[in-house]
Image (cartoon, rainbow, N blue to C red; front, side, top):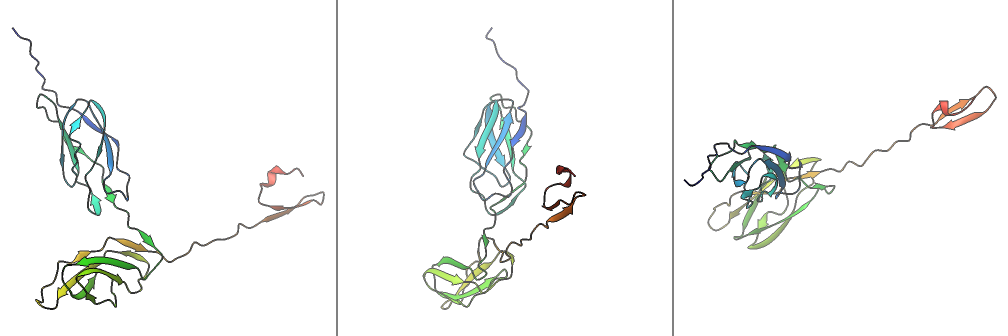
Length: 207
């Protein structure tokens, strides 16, 4: 009789290295451990071209993700006998980090396939109100400090049809400079008439 193997034990998965959060990399790396080799499947927002696991640590790279919070990603491994692991919940992470700017009248360039009137949303506005069939650079009117998720829409003057709103990548305006202050100096007079002014601890000096 030929030998055969019965295996009904599914792989066991655990998280090793989570995606740093927030991160400016929208193709983030993630490491998990599997007790068996097998085929990886993904669920939620995440996917990857890394589809094979080994017994041990596995580093994978997620395909490019949209801006935002990703809290529903899951990983499963199926071994060669068809046993499926439980879903491994990938720790929630945010991608990408909104860029910072101290220019409260920032510029932005977008491309339009039709000319028309520009309208703005999400807290942004501009004196640039007309788009051409080409790249269009607009300068937003001065913005208060804060994080913005602006949109741009172009309405064609001929047909009157409006484009879908274009989401401008989230950005943060910060025009507040750092504040500095001097640490006060302390002065002491010892019994023998010796004076000391400085920031070292008093007990370091003999009376």
